[in-house]
Length: 548
Image (cartoon, rainbow, N blue to C red; front, top):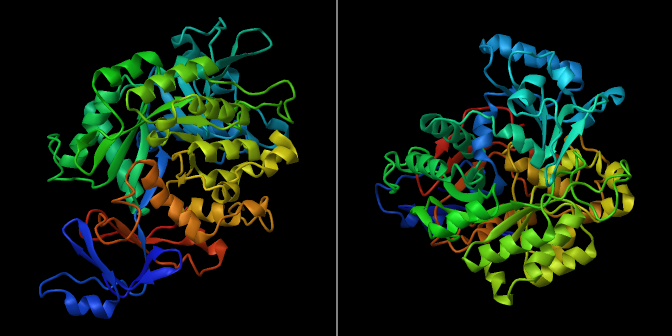
């Protein structure tokens, strides 16, 4: 690859890269490398475009991305009535037979008209269908909205069970309203159709191809909660080898996968991982598939008022959110995982949840810092929490693209004092906290440029607010790119082979049509991938398409 602007590190660029096999063997000027390459070596003219390391998404859900395309897309809906109409159209267009489940994703009640900023209830969703179970998820994935048929199948049409770490909301008649939050949503998630092995392969393949088309070459992906671990591992093995044999000689979709593994029944599946002898870094397909961290949940989401806060929500004074589990249980699980050689990445958004996670890590032996335990999302913070994270070496696994939406609700939910110290990426950098950027796709789009733009501008897609949301927490482009490549590689113990264009590293790179280091910040979102390379494979050109 020559005639490129090759990003090496902050302020340093080269003109060409020489690849041999799956490794980068030399980086330098175009003139120098062209003079050195032997006859017969394939030469690719980059036309002056920007060459970046392949992006490494630190946390997303590839299986959910693959499944999303077969559901009602509720994103952007501005009213309950619009969702009802879209649901009816979906059933009719797809000729879904009576009794078959209908799923949807992407509802955001904060986008509804002022008089209707509420969740759709069972009565609303019964208007979509009375003969199909209908389950729609809020955009954060932490709230399930169900019609009467779905509640009947879950056995909660008329009774209100008590769920630890969850809420079953009720209507005026005292019956479940169809709104299930946090752990209560598992009552209906258990009804979701289980994909066949073939469907699971197709679902993951489709998601991986989408990610690759946006320059994402590595992903730490949360696709299993325990019961389906073997099925998900087998699907990835088949995709990456073409034969399920555990060797990467016939890769069908070349992408590097780190499995973030959940534990739905807490101790039970943790014990099964330990019994199988799995530790973080266990290799399933050489260079392409390995065991990552164990994932637990400490709370919910800000948009659904279920993020666990130390003080009440400003717009819901009677609520401090919903802790997903007690602090004692969290400490026991993490201590057990750490002792068994398992890294943990814990979902924590509210400051109370983040504090509980930090306390959990502080209670571990000092040498546990080598596990690189992390806080996934890490949104509502203050200086004290960040100081403690820095001292303990806790990794912040964050999704800057969240802010493009949350900046419109953060002050309403939190007040200005808490909002000013949240999404504090600049403060994390000043303290030396290791950060790994990602998208939580399909919560946000898998396109990394959306996250880089949000981190650099702290604005939404329309450029609001002017000057940025608490602009002192902005980071520069080099920091954002670094956290999205080398930072994520560090979080997953890949920093000596991935995340940089450097001699000896794996040849994972993406060519972009826009120089994001010199273009106006508001143009970063429009940058397009020209091609993606994984392990030195021939460049894969991407069809022209509008970037989201």
